[in-house]
Image 1 (tube, rainbow, N blue to C red):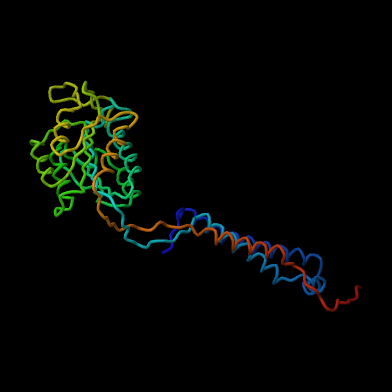
Image 2: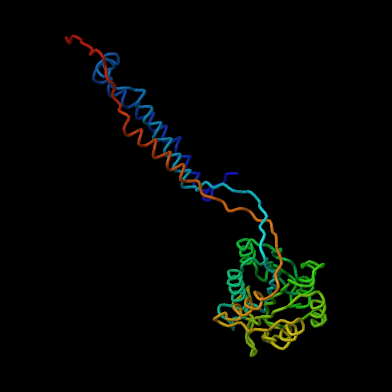
Length: 339
């Protein structure tokens, strides 16, 4: 299948009819200019060695070359074949808190932006592991299924924000439950959940969900974003801060105790997010030592550019236009008599 990476440039092709019209008018103007010097038959005999057909051919070559170069600028690409990729690794789900508390700026530029940047860096570290994304606040859903297509996972990661889930709150238990449902229920190993949140749980008792994850063979690593001292939550619709029903500014604090309990329950570890992102290296180091399995995933093959063929053909036509003379050899010159 052929596609164009810069398809908007194809609109430039609408200029070709204007160029054709310009050349038609130019030929007519040239013809009118010749008539001023004498009759049309006489001028044709005087200019027998000038080929009108070759003039039209040279113009056609120029117009075709321009069209081909426009196609080249639009970057034609091919490659839609779906192939199954097999590698050795573990299944990793990353659950990201997208509640409004993650908009707090005690971490630059915000807790959520910091979390997304860390996950993107984490994906870059993966070598053969399947990655999936879960977005959660008051409820949870799978943002990206388990896949070996790291580029696709980054695309899904980029669009995660609080507007994805209208249900407010932070239900850590719901995120763990969604991970349990997403992993292969028949296996009791090769499964890792990385939970990134500020830890302010507003749901049910999260430890019972952690215990179920442990029974399912899921190892949970928790990453705390924010500060224990707390930070007000910016309002998305104004320049102020979120307030409760009593009019007091809501302060969101990092709950490290809960996150440590979740990680310890499943044999994982808790890390607080740092500017150097050392916690990601440590988590990946832990994962890389785990027993691995053969993983398969459907993946679109990469699109390959084919603009070079259009450029090469256009250059060939322009070269031919350059060496093609307008004049032709006449075997016998016309001899006339002027009055």
